[in-house]
Image 1 (tube, rainbow, N blue to C red):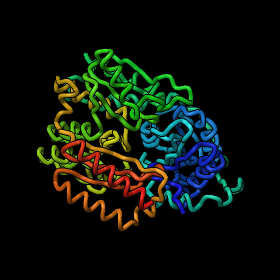
Image 2 (image 1 turned 60 degrees about the vertical axis):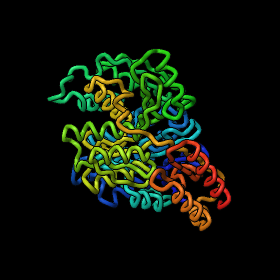
Image 3 (image 1 turned 30 degrees about the vertical axis):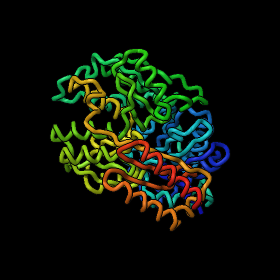
Image 4 (image 1 turned 90 degrees about the vertical axis):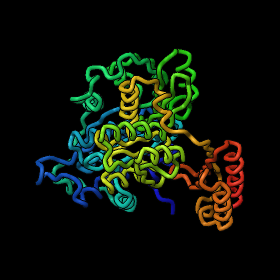
Length: 461
């Protein structure tokens, strides 16, 4: 049986895989499981009902899914603060800052508009562990709690659209702390193009960068419910690159649909990916003596150039499976403060409980401003090895994972590349796809090896 929860919550085509009924059931089951686990406030302990905050990105389907989630929570005796359209990391922050017992975000992140998803945050603003998600999934389909079981009555629903100001103020404080030489306007003098992906960042990212002192040119900032991630944002960096060079801007920032990712481009339009951003932030923190454990957490997808740059700087790299939840688990386990993914999910635990694209953009640009260097020069702290990624769809992921023939092909490719390259074959956690990644000194060798392994995956599945 396929697990309902993937690496980043429940995700599927809205109205088909992810129906209003399923959204309501997930909300009810979440309330019931967290209540039974003692993770919810009780009237006896706190004098109030449990509290949940609910946000969404601007997809049209988010409206009916939000209504379903709110109904499921309120019907289970949970008070709800409805945040409206807001970035995922803002929901995580407000879950913690408002003392809520649950945070719910309705978004399919970088996926196209027909998709949607449900992301859950527990008390404190962290994503729920796999074991708790499994309990919620097991609880689906059980009868809803009766009104007579709700000692404090049904939950009440309140619109809280002014609360996001807390989030923006918090982000600004991360670069305007005492001791910061550019406290008033850390990005003064920078012209930045920000691509909001016609998503949740549209009402937040331009405002944040302007408040930090930058001159901002916003694109992808007119969401209509259907154009999210369409030809824009972190999955279509060519749009941002073209605008940066056309406008003569100093830098460009790209977010995905729910703004938990950040990728960038320099003034020359060249892409700066999550590995480079992570390297810049790690070196900056280490240089100030503020990198806990002198360690950074990354995933198996991180470029070999990132590992080499960290080794040269004497910074330890801890590697995890793909998924920011696994990066976060390793950060907690080792008491580390910085981690991230090549895709642009960057976690800075001093300021956030999850990947935060707006925070990442602010910290990256402030680092360049402090060093008085172009962003491309700052990002040159690591040399990227050519990397080829091939997605193989329409295969049975379980059969591929168990294939001895594929395992032999992967072993042979690794032996051929030696220490000057890497091979990774893994099933996607969010899509019906197997991903093949190859790094090598020369792009031609990486492409050839990736194509061979993709053919082996197709044959195995």
